[in-house]
Image 1: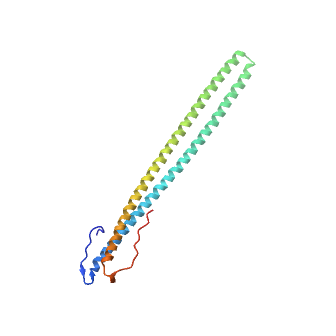
Image 2: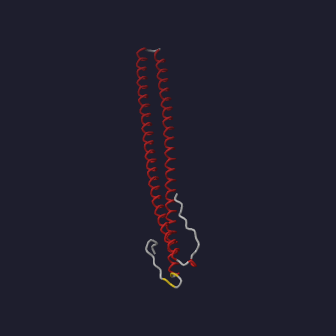
Image 3: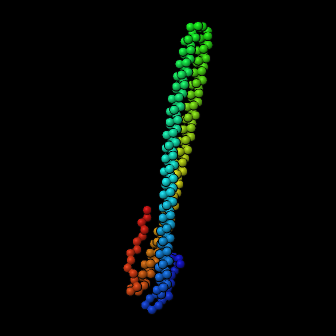
Length: 199
């Protein structure tokens, strides 16, 4: 029995048919229970999505921290390599300089070329690290944006379902009030009807 449909009861002595009225009240209670269960389902879905959003945010922070650590480690290692190469080249040039000027010059030139190659490699490693960090940051931003969009959609969906549930409950309460208004006074049941609180 749909609470929104027009309801008529067979009249008996001293009022309407009590069995029909009881069945209608039971149907109204069932409709209220269904609306309440739907509201609980919506709340559970919202909490689940909120948990996923927080999980994504935590992963984003961890990725950002890991990228920073990688960049710092690469910078330290490349600096040590550059220092070692420079030191070795200068030491070797000093030793060979005492034996032959020409040979020392050639060794120095080779050392400088090797140093230049190492600097190019350092720049390449630094550039790759910065590119990886930028890509990780962009992925994290997209994950956060998607999570925010999903959160907004869930809030809208939950609000819509809650409004529908409240509307159904209002109709149920109005039907009960109309029913109480037409029932004989000796069959009235004192009760308090309250609207659910919208969160």
